[in-house]
Length: 228
Image 1 (cartoon, rainbow, N blue to C red):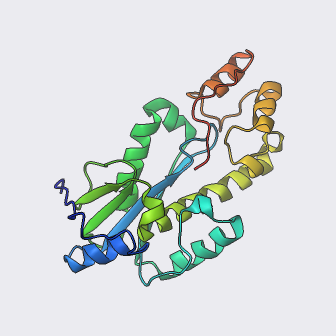
Image 2: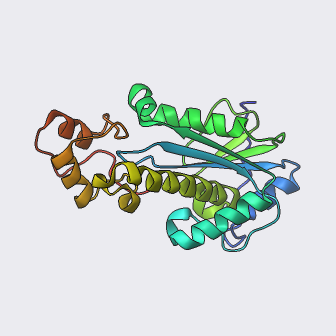
């Protein structure tokens, strides 16, 4: 279904808390509600990980994964997986990102993560941008991981899943420091690329990696730098 339901502005109050969207949509008969988010969009190495979550009971302490300590993310990850009605996770490798483009992979990954969910959906909340072709009405929520509990839960599942993968990758390529920076651009990562060149887990569509692969001096203004 491609129709988009947009609640009246008065439905979700600013002080309604992280569960305000879910409660408002549930009152309108639009449950179950899935939240969708990704991790690794701004990294120049490692996969893009997309998660979709339909929450069960309310979980205290949920918030945007970037605002949590690693230990708290791990704790909440376990709580989400043990109480959620459904969870879907999609891992998109660097080679697919280079071949198809980052945004296209992000949109496709969100569709695939939602398709993995084991329940019929009433509504989907996506973080940041609209995703056509979902099996239920949907709404793109600006900074959704900060204002909607199911999106925050999806951000935690995606982030923890990806961080664990990057830590495991560090055991095979310790020269890059993946366990520390998780594939994002840092001074250490830039130096490692300069000295060792890229490995198969780098994204050659990023200028930092492309320049390192050509053996040229890397610039300061890098494409895709950031943390997600």
